[in-house]
Length: 116
Image 1 (spheres, rainbow, N blue to C red):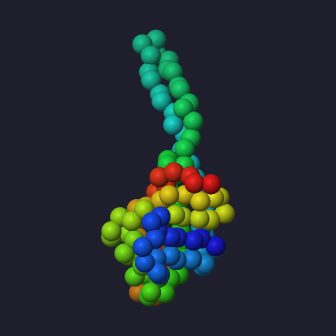
Image 2 (image 1 turned 90 degrees about the vertical axis):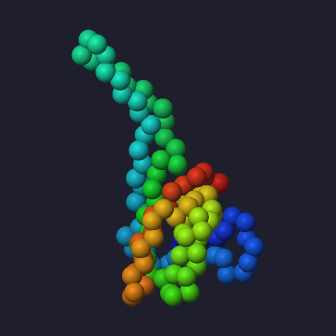
């Protein structure tokens, strides 16, 4: 289950539970690596770790008309969300939202920070 809610809840109905997501959630992350060429033809690599903010989290699911309306509200108003799923709880924004007429949705989240 994937749960979305506003960080600062000021009205009822400001959360969504996504259930139909069979192709969602693979781990995909990039490392913060600097690469500098040296004058002798070599190079220097510096591995500066990884962070959840370097990840995109993509969800493909089905949503109802009411859920689609809430997702559009979150996306269009740039609302900071609490995104909770099997890896933990994160502060996140919806980066890309695609909802088809039949309720099929593709959502890309960008993480701001990990909460737990």
